[in-house]
Length: 339
Ligand code: TXA
Ligand code: MG
Image 1 (cartoon, rainbow, N blue to C red):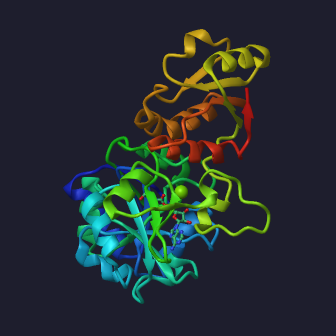
Image 2: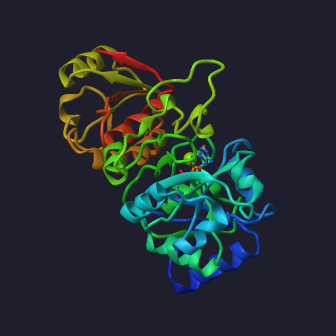
Image 3: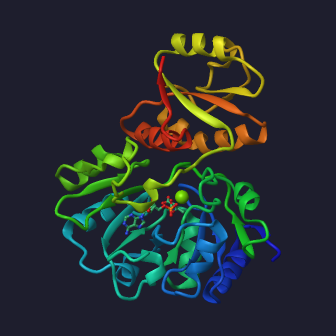
């Protein structure tokens, strides 16, 4: 299959909608990361997403809507708390998990009785959903296990020959995937941290939000993940990544004694001059928004430069930085060394 990369505009959005209505898969920009979209109501279309990504069948997909009247196509029983969150954060980088509707495709839910839904804020994503007229199931548009794509070129690198069309809507502003909160149980649970923080969710709902164990820790053998995606190795570049937790001085000393061919520092912006080895940066130390924006492209750059071993500076673990730490931890296969 030939893959076309087109600048997003009226004609290419209409073409994307035509392909989506015909059951095809299209790469689209969102404010978080690029998505691999298909008609969320079609059990013929959705399996093509799993095939293109090489995604395990038991990992459910997020459905994307452009207006609240699409919500009942994906979920039923929408509690007041869900409306409060929708009002506060939609359109935007927040995904809600609720009991599934009958109309959403079984393959989207991967056998669960819940479904996840979000209204993205990227104008191109909203235009494509509106033009297609159906909710769009869309995981991140990377090959399963690789870093998520934050530019159309990243999508092309992973999806060339596998999908007919990618819309280029520029670099994603947020850079990490949406915050995922489950409202399907007795208590709200944060399953995946993102740009919308736990504190913001608690403020909007007026109640406590529990943090799923899988967010900051490796699940033990036999433990099951509330969010199936959290159990897989994720976001990993080809290099072996280790997070070094400690002061910058301690990091510098460690790098001095570990510098060798193929060893890279994944450090904060501005730290490069003090380090003895090649560096890739991912935002300033005190700017978690910059870190979120830069992390996945930094991981892809390390691959492009042929890094074999990467030692990463450790982000903070609260607020937006919790999302950065959560992704980096998976990229590092949970290897963290205290220095
Ligand atoms: O920002 C985003 O959310 C991006 C853009 C494209 O919108 N999408 C995205 O999708 O990150 P994906 O498939 O890469 O991640 C979805 C995560 C997975 O960890 C999946 O297991 C979880 O959400 N998930 C989806 N539906 C679920 C459900 N019903 N119950 C529990 N976890 C669910
Ligand atoms: Mg993903």
